[in-house]
Image (cartoon, rainbow, N blue to C red; front, side, top):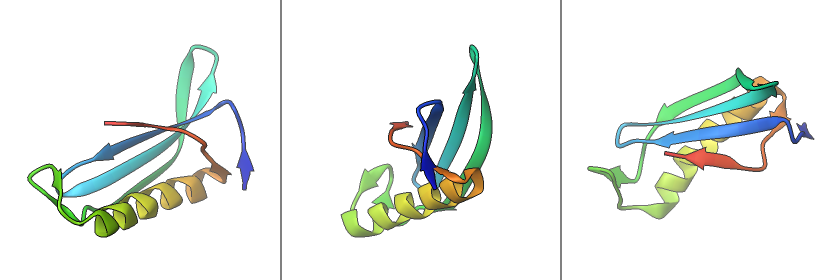
Amino acid sequence: MRYESRLMGGLDIGTTKVSALVGERCGDRARVIGNGVTTAEGLKQGVVVDIDKATRSVVRAVREAEKMAGAKVRRFNVG
């Protein structure tokens, strides 16, 4: 997989699911080229209760998005 500066990542960590997006800058716009969604584990009512499980959920979503995009993203914006 490649690292490219025109790529950006977005990560949403919720109580029930973790979603990751990989986008590609196209001028002043962005195009989604990869996404990943997994069940959120290790979280309860928006609070991390098991850091290892929460980390695994984030890693699964990010890997799925990067695999679909065919690229690795160095930074993710988290919401």
